[in-house]
View: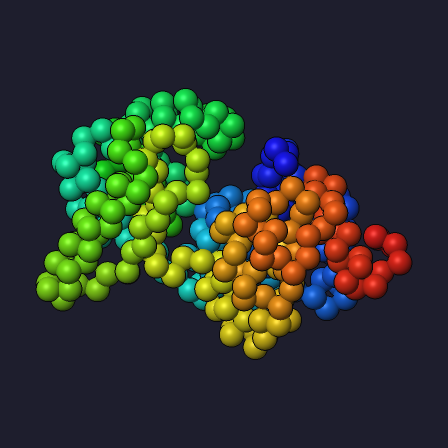
Length: 306
């Protein structure tokens, strides 16, 4: 339906409900492991994980930026940080900068946002205006506390070590036209880098999942940016089989993970694409504690919590 979906683990206010924390904590105490797999960056993810730790739930691994970065803990002690890097497949800013410059030359009305080392930066007020006009809900949720940085965007991009994703918007070019042309530009620069014997992270140019009416909107990121890739790294690291994983998700960026995991469950208010792939669709929403209810049934608990 039209109910807002703000995250699988979090409710629509951005909080993790007490009943969810209690169920996951019990699951971990009974020998399970808990991994947060998210499209959001490292800063957001560690804040969530630390908050859960303070409430008694220990998170074992972080798959952030849709699998672009995978982190584990160096030890099993309660307060160890997630600083063991298992995997990173993000391009550095230096390899994206010439692509951005060429797009800007050919399409001066294009505007950009990028996740640079965990911080989202916006290139111009045009980007804000397009998002505000065509998706006010997303604007209020994700951009209301940010400011455009027209002078700093390129220098920050060039200095950045890890770009999780870059979004390109254009007010008058369709998404398909924009995707085709940016793909050509990316391919051109990839060939140039190959000729100059530079190693580059292969890039994928895709239609953005952010819906902005007639605005052309595409996302550029590493080819193997997928939660599935990140979880497969953790599975190998920990000696686990994909069949042992129970994945909770609600959106397009969960589809690879759903195909990979042994079981997958989505809430009642998930996107249709997630519902079509999930092993099970819960009768409850993310606001109604669907994760806790699923664990209760899967683990054979009589009550939700003791």
